[in-house]
Amino acid sequence: MVKKASHHLKVTDFGNDFLWGVAIAAAQNEGAHDSYGKGPSIWDTFSKRNGRIKSSHNPYIACDFYHRYKDDLLLVKALGFKAFRFSISWPRILPEGGSKLNKEGVAFYHRMIDECLKLDLVPFLTLYHWDMPAALEKEGGWASHLLLKWFTRFATLCAEEFGDKVKNWIILNEPFGFTSLGYMLGKHAPGKRGMQNFLPAILNASLAQASGGQIVRSIVSKSRIGTTFSCSEVIPHTHKERDIAAARRVDVLLNRLFIEPALGQGYPREDFKFLDKLELYTWKYTKRMHFDFDFIGVQNYFPVVVRYSPLIPVLQAMQVKAVRRKVPKTAMGWEISPDGFYNIIKRFWSYEKVKEIIVTENGAAFKDKLMNGVVDDVDRIEYFHQHIRALLKAKQEGINVTGYFAWTLMDNFEWSEGYHARFGLVHVDFRTQLRTIKNSGYWFRDFLNSR
Image (cartoon, rainbow, N blue to C red; front, side):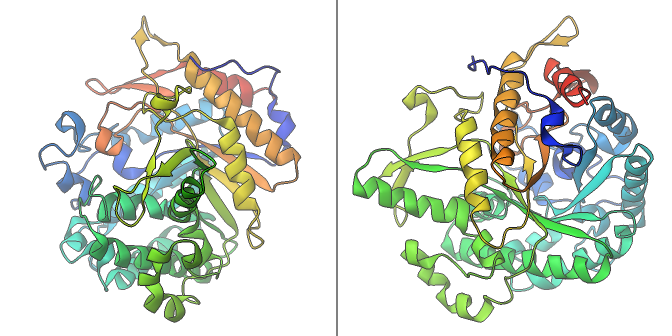
């Protein structure tokens, strides 16, 4: 059970201009995986491989958002949110990744965006949220020297199609997440391993992040452009020098690897000599990785405690998990730490060139039970209460944090966890697609309507 937070939170504490939203992603919600002209994504193909996803789950139907988006957007509205973050499925609009456009896919996003605008919800469009077309993965995906050409075509198409309706753009969702899990550890699609995949993927993601920003800026008038980073406060297990050094190396990967090139600082090689392998890229590409983002999206779920480990090559560090440290944790085993959330926001604000921060994801999975039409998820309510209080503290201290997006609207396909990890404010019965607002959803409604 999560410790109770004291004091009453009021939405008015954040001011009238603060933007409250909820986020989803195409691959996790849309379904209709091979309908209406959509091509396969890397997650469609990855889920066919034995043992890669819990219980052999797949994203083929997911929440069926493709067919139910009108009702689901009404839920967003009913819960009191003012903004809706979604992503464009790359293989839905470019099924083969090439230049052949799927008009039905484009039309779907126009309908969905129009519905947002009709409901007075501010659309936040994420260009890439982990669903590379499988056709491009066959050519090397994020590790290919052609990646930038492919991504430029995709970003240009989206900006030209949706730019008159959508002014808030997010270029990449968590580049460290999809490069490390997909191209180094093999735990996520496309399931590749090794430095020979990881290093070119890092470079391509940094370049795509900047070039996507430039494309949107050149095409979309009055655009506000950001990109998002998964980040965690990294804490050494002890005060021993080698634990501190291990924490520094992990921090480079988790928190600095993509933001510093985006800010024009190049890769943080001085604190992790392994990145000298990127030296050839660094001097050549430093300018091309730089883009002046209007906002930085911070996505935080948990802090990481690390200790030195000689058994792990290169990194020489390993995580000391929450269960071992006997601290409060979610169903995913992630430590619950509003202080860590506050500290990481503060940390990202300390970069001189960061002008504005939006929390583009924050949330928790718990073992929800639907009983008599009710999901009484008190732990999730407490999680949000504590984290929003920590956010308020950061804002009151002068950090220019302008919005908060809860992850996520409804239970969905949680990558390699399949449908086991439930993060939603709305419960989904995946057999019937019945939606049930959880008590955390009602908590948000009451909090946001306390205006």
